Structure formats: structure tokens, C-alpha cells
Image (cartoon, rainbow, N blue to C red; front, side):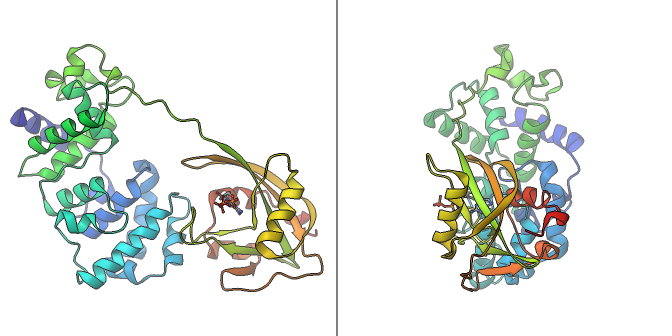
Length: 353
Ligand code: DGT
């Protein structure tokens, strides 16, 4: 089975792979950057972020020495900001503990913050030619179809992994892993796979059973909860107030308007006053609505309602995680996407709240 899969797969990959900027490099650091960005994010979204990152931080040391704020700014819009925070921590560890050399030992690399089995396998096989599987969603689908696995039970996932482990060649393991991923991305897609041009269809059980798209069974997606969130843009002349989210929270290290989730039975305005009292210790004067936008995160979605406000005699205390900025300074801070949607609704002529 190994030779049978390896040769056609590598041949197909070499002739059909997409030209991607992170495939043009052999630098383990840059390969790692791309793999962190590719977690939960599509290739076409990642490309401009990757290009900007490696231009700004061409070496591991340059990124390890940068401030988290600067890195988050480059990450702005890519989402899942925990990836960026963990990557920064991991880079610092590599700098301090491994003298800037990414460890090529699986367990040591796996121990770094944010590095899971997939990332370790991908980076070590692509950058260091280590014979380690890199099993992502695409590889899982390709292998489940080849093996005829319908239910991805824990036992079957182990079986799938054992098979990749057995198949992965000592020569070209990185291209082998990338070949499986690319096949999953371009040919062995979830719906209507292009079996007629697949280099592995003659080895594929799902193809033989005639209904490849049924392999593996799709898990039912959980319905995401939806929250109503309010936030205040509190103005002092031409500046408004922003605060930095706790580093360990979701969207950690990003800047936001004070606010939070609306409780059951509460009006938007009551919720806003309560949240601003809790977070800033003032009761604001709510002037008028800026607008409402919707945004979806991995585990929930929000309706985000923002209001222009001003202080009501009392002033917000100062701290290093709080500041007042003008609209021209938005670009110097990292904000969640929902806030950018709100910024685009602010009409400068209406600013005299
Ligand atoms: P919590 O209170 O433990 O649920 O913690 P948070 O801070 O995650 O949640 P909360 O109550 O502030 O809910 C607001 C959600 O809306 C939060 O998940 C992040 C998102 N969001 C996006 N932009 C903003 C913003 O400018 N302000 C606030 N407060 N939340 C924002």
C-alpha cells in the first residue's frame, strides 16, 4: 500500500500543488508562521497576513523581540488571537531556551505554547524532513475515504493515524503530508469530490463503495448561542475611551469599548449603564445609537449595539490599559472585527454628541 500511495501522491502533488508563498521557503520559522496562521483559517485569507508578517519580522528573533501589541496589530482581522499570543510565548522560549533554533524533536516542539500534534508534525516534516504525520481536517477526510471509515470514533481516528504513520515515507515526508492535505483541499473535497481525476481513486474504499461523499460522516454542528452585547463610545471632546482586554480572555490583548452582554429582560440602555458602572465606575449619559452589527465567533455569535456616550460629571480613572484616542488613531491599536464594523458606521458629521 505504501508505494502504491506514495508514488502517485507525490507525483500528483509535484505537478498540481498551488504556488503559495510559504511553499517557497525552507526557513523553519516561516513555515511555522504559516502553520500557526493556517489553523482554523483558509489559505487565501492567510496569504496576505503571512506576507506582511514575514516582511515585518523576517527572523524568529525579530518576532520574539517584538511587543505583543505590535504582533497583534499584524494579526488584526485574522481572528483566534490566542494563536498569536501563544506563538509569541513560544518564540520567546525558542529564543531563550534553544538559542533561536526551533527544536526538531517532536516532544520538545509539542511542549511549546500553542503547538499541537498537527502543527508539530507539519513543521517538523516540512522543515526538517521528519517522518511525522500531520493530520488536519483534509488529511482526515482523504484517509477516511481511502480506508473506508465512516464514523470517526476515537478508535477509528487512532486507526487512521496508525495508517498515516505506516504510509509516510522517510524520503520526502513533508511533501507526502502536504500532498495529502492538498489532495483534500483540491480533489477529495467534502461534497462532490473529483474522484475521476484523483490519483488515489483506484486505492480508495469510499470510491469503490460508490458514495465517497458519505465518508466520513459529518458531525452535526452544535447550534451556537447568540448574545446581545452593548458597548459605549464615551467621548471627551474629539477623543473616545478604549480599554485593553485581559490577555488571558478571548480577544485577549485587543482594545475595546466598555460594555458587555445584555441580561435577560434588561433594556440595551440599562445594560450599558450597568456595564459601564461595573467597568469604569461611572454612570454615563447615553446620547444616541451609533448602530448595530452582527459578528460570529467560533463558539457564539453576537449582535453588537453601540451608543455614543459622555461622562456625567464623574471622570473615568486612568490606568495603563485605558486610554483616550481620536478616530485618526484607530490604526495604532488592535480592535476586534466587530469594532471595525462599528467604526465604519461613525459619521463624523454626527460626532457632536
Ligand atoms: P464575560 O463577562 O466573562 O462573558 O467576559 P467577556 O469580556 O468576554 O464578555 P462581555 O460580557 O464583555 O461580552 C462581550 C463580547 O463581545 C465579548 O465576547 C467580546 C465581544 N466584543 C467585541 N467588541 C467588543 C467591545 O468593544 N466591547 C465589549 N465589551 N465586547 C466586545
